[in-house]
Structures are given as C-alpha cells and as structure tokens.
Image (cartoon, rainbow, N blue to C red):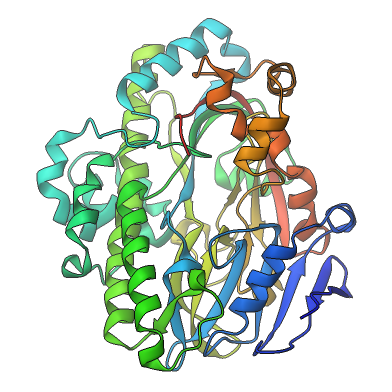
Length: 475
C-alpha cells in the first residue's frame, strides 16, 4: 500500500489508516527533518504496528524515527489493557535501555586533558566496556534474584548508593511484578554482565552544561552553565536481549493459536491476559529491574572513580543523580480515558508539570527528559509540557541513525571521524572499532530536539557538550 505522509499541523504528519491498519500513524518532523526523510521501512513498521489487535488511538513516530526490529526505533504504540496485545519486539531487545544524568560541582575549566584522562582510566578500571564483558561485582551474582526483583532500590539498601538516587529514578528504580520463573536459564546465564557498558551506542560520557535555556527549571534540576556532568547510557545487556529473543520466538509460534494475523515477525504478539503474555511481562519486569540496577552500580563505580582521580569524596564533589529515564519499555498507563499498555521503543516518557505519576521531587516541574546525541555532538535535558498527551506523554530518546553501522564503516574515513570529534577524548585507540558511532551516522540532534520544542510539546532546559567518552567495542 502507498505510504504517503500528509501534513497534519505544525511538525506533524499523518499516515492515514488503510488496509489492515486499525488506527492512523502520526510522525513528528520539523521542516529540515521532513525534507531529508527517507524512512520508508520505518513507516511500514509503523503501519504494521497500527494493525495490531487492540491498538488505541494512533501509533506515533518520534523525530528520531528509523528502522528497527518490528517497531521502528522512535516508535510508540498503545494497546487496550483488557483486549489488546503485548509485543516483545515492540519493546525491543535491550529492555530498559536508558540514560542517567549525574551532576557535579566541578567546573569545566578544571577539566584539563590530564585530569580527564585520569578520570577515564579510573572509570575503565571499574566498569568493563564492550560486547560480552563480565561484571566485576562478583559479590552480587549469588544475589541475582534480589537484583531482578529489587532493582536499583535493592542496591541502595545494600549500600551501593543513597536514597536520593532512587528518588531521581523512573519508577523509583524498581517495578513490581518481576517473575523469576518466567526467565529462561539462558537469560540467567547472561546476567553476569551486570554493571557493564556494552557496545554499540552505549557509553559513559564526561561533559559539561554548555547552555541553559530555562534557568528556573535548570535550577530545580541542579544544573548551571559550565558545570561538569556525567551521562550513563546502558540497559539490561545480554540478559534483556535473551528475554526478548525467547519471547519474540514464543509469541511468533503462538500467534495463530490466539487468532492473531501477525503483520510482521518482528511484531510477534500475544494477548496481554494470555499465559504467554503474562509470562513475558514478568520476565520483562525482571529485565527492567536488572537495567535500573546496572545503571545504579555504574553510578557507584563512577563515584569511586572520581574520588580516586580527584582526591575528594563523591559527596564533596556534589555527584548527585539528576534523573534516570528508560526508553525501551512497556507500561500500563492511563491515556484518552482508558487503561492501556504503552510500548515505547527508542522513546522516553515525558510527563508534564503536575502529572501525578511524576517523581515527588519533580511533581511541579515535570521530570527531566534526557536526550543523548552522538559522542561528538550535544545532548539535551528537556521536560514534557501540557499537550504532550497526544504522544502518550512520550518524547524522542536520542538523535536517531541515518547511516547503518555497515554504511558508517564504509563511508566515514579516519580523517572525517577525528575531525567530527574535535577535542573530545575517547578510550578506543582504533577508530575502526567505533566508527559506526561517528556523529555522521546520526541525525542532527538540534533539529530532532527542536521538532517537539517548536510546537510546545517539550521545553528545552539545557544543552550538554561532551569532553570525554568511554565506549565499548562491538554492536
């Protein structure tokens, strides 16, 4: 069927319901992004998602939309909590991949090259980076069941953080309903990657606040210009990947039994109230908690690294968590007067001021929305605004790729790669190992963030700029 986007209003385009689609698809693009938009496969994936049983209102494509597995990255789909389906592919392989922002009371002017390198080495000594790397927190592996049910909240109770950390974490660092019996032995065997970065687009980034757009909100978040920050981007690692693999295969095999005509294998789904649907939710909640714990442990290790490199306690360095937000997740929420299961894949929740589900400390401001760019470009802190309910209170999670990893390896030369990074330090000596994450492989982060900000769905709070990035090899 023809996949033609029609203007729907400022920075909004609609793919009208047609064929097996049960609802429209709405994509958010500003003029610059619309002009360069070539995401036919991603549009088809949105159309497929709009064909799922029980889909509600519309499916949504964020400004960073690009092809994914089943649902595009930057896709949001909600299904009725009573009559709809849950799809493992619509959540994704890296369940609760997310971003955590840590502020400090250090100034950018204090971060010369030698000091940055000292901090980087101290972080690398504590946090393994790369595909398949194993945890250095061996003391926690015998307590895996507690980690999977307790998440970051359990680790704070055990001394790997402070209560303020979970106060600044989505869902307070733990979701209910984790079902250990729903997790395969293969997934358990991959849980040894706790407190690791992984490869691909995951990272630990030392940067600074380059510009503040809203001083009142920035003050509420503890941010000011020139301040050194740390961003952590990682998820549930091999554990979550295995959960998705297990249930995507099981749902594909069971679809016909439930009378579901799958639009694509990547959107394999089962009724929410079916045995397989309930098992997936239980296993997914384990992976969500694993990811919250992963970022909490890395926060603990990063604080220790700064203590070693700077010769001061992390408390004296002011290393508080600003927020931790997920962007590959499914949650039961209320939208348009009904209870739905919102699948956000490469999209982050963005609750507006006054929304009752906001964490207590951000009830009156709306919680921070963390939008990382590539390792050579800016990242943003934003907040949702009234009216963002039209996206199921969702915003984009990053810049979005324009080049596949293979294309980036072919097209980005050594010279272009290093020029795009400028003075940003990296921990990987061979550029070929991380060239697929070059800034040229991503959309313009400024245009992506402006798309929702221009129409008042989000508000920009601050822009961050990288100084040093720690990444792992592999994707």
